[in-house]
Amino acid sequence: MKPIIEVTELSKAYGDNVVLKNISVDIDSKEVVVVIGPSGSGKSTFLRCLNLLEEPTGGNIAIEGKSLMDKSTSITKIRTEVGMVFQQFNLFPHLKVLDNITLGPIQIRKWPAQKAKSKAMELLDKVGLADKANAFPASLSGGQSQRVAIARALAMEPKIMLFDEPTSALDPEMVGEVLAVMKELAKEGMTMVVVTHEMGFAREVGDRVIFMEQGYIVEQGTPEQIFERPQQERTKAFLSKVL
Amino acid sequence: MDFRFDIIWDYAPLLLKGTLYTIAISISSILLGSILGLGVSFGKMSSRRFLRWPMQSYVNFFRGTPLLVQIYIVHFGLIPLLYGKTNALIAAITALSLNAAAYTAEIYRAGIQSIDKGQMEAAKSLGMTHAQAMRFVILPQAIRRMIPAFGNEFIVLVKDSSLVALITAPEIMYWSNAMKAQYIRVWEPYLAAAFIYFVLTYFLSKLLAAVERKV
Ligand SMILES: Nc1ncnc2c1ncn2[C@@H]1O[C@H](COP(=O)(O)OP(=O)(O)OP(=O)(O)O)[C@@H](O)[C@H]1O
Ligand SMILES: [Mg+2]
Image (tube, rainbow over all chains, first blue to last red; front, side):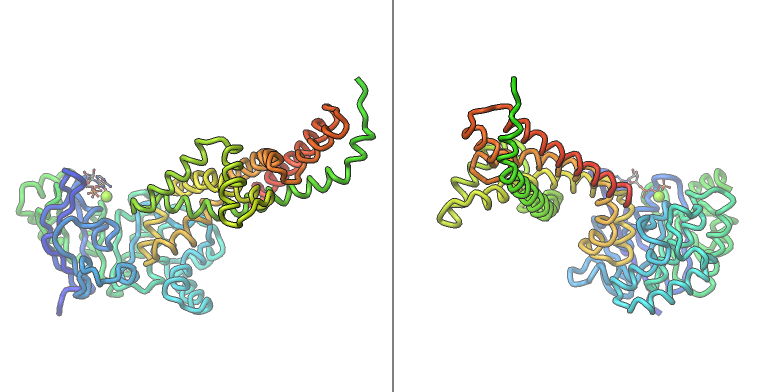
């Protein structure tokens, strides 16, 4: 089957600072890809190129065979298929939890309010927060906020989910609850690209681990290959620091 | 010095009428100015230079020249050009609205830019267009933060509206001037005007504080 995401010689520069250098990678439907690497290596930039929050300076990205660089491709349409979860949650603070989740389906997908609401309640139930439907984001803990953010992204019924360090802003005791939701999602067959420092999650849930450094993909393989038998010196050096 | 309340009493109906005009002129101008200002601020923040440059110049002009000059230009220039004759009331509202638009544009810009950029990114990542993100995510949050600055601008506008007496718009200051001319007295007409403006701005600031508490 054709990969759901095809990245070909992707590059990204901010002025003279080349942050991504000829990245090529294909990701299959239902695959869980974990991206690891030191700070500043370009992990976030790579992820943000996949839904065009950052505009690549070269190369190509295709999602379900449609090139994002093609002028005729609707970027907003593509984004409805590619959900994203941010390190800082980015919940909409002026809206109740329920309205955070239904906003997209109602305004973008044009669902009737009732349908959006029952979908939202179903998702809140799934992330264990059905009782918070009428709370405002300010009253939630970090772990709860991130679970709502995941529910909000899922409400659009995306085919792909991107996670940019979803647990890095959380107190340690809340990391588990968010990872559990992500694990569940992986089990259901969601295509996921996850930037994380949670090596346990990478090992357990990842189908593939990509190690990035200085804008390059240095090495990639199964968690087993990367964690047990890394081939590159730089991968070994990085892992020795984080494991 | 004797203070003749009786002449203020004589003029009370006209001062009251003037006060209603001041209120009407101020409310129309802040409303029109706010709507116009939103457009100006979007133009100013646009990535397109052909929108940004004219809107930046607009703001620079209205903030960099005296309001009285703007009122004269509108009254003696713009309105006759458009209508074929002068009209003090229309000129007053037009000039004050154009002026308020420049100042409110800056309020919108500051308010919008004070919203964390993660909000726009989250909205876009859901698939919203820029306009949808503005309407449903950015503006509802930004407007709350803008309320104090808007209140301030509204109060300034009420006071500045006294300048339109100079083009014979029949508001508070116009009738004070008339009173002064009729009785050749200084204190009564101007203290009466000052008192009315003070009461207006005082209640306006109380009202705005209540609105601020509510949202
Ligand atoms: N908007 C920007 N303007 C200029 N430079 C940027 C911008 N965003 C990122 N960079 C630069 O690009 C490089 C890669 O950043 P990126 O955020 O992708 O790294 P990262 O691997 O996600 O790091 P971290 O683990 O700290 O999140 C860094 O050197 C960063 O300074
Ligand atoms: Mg990052």
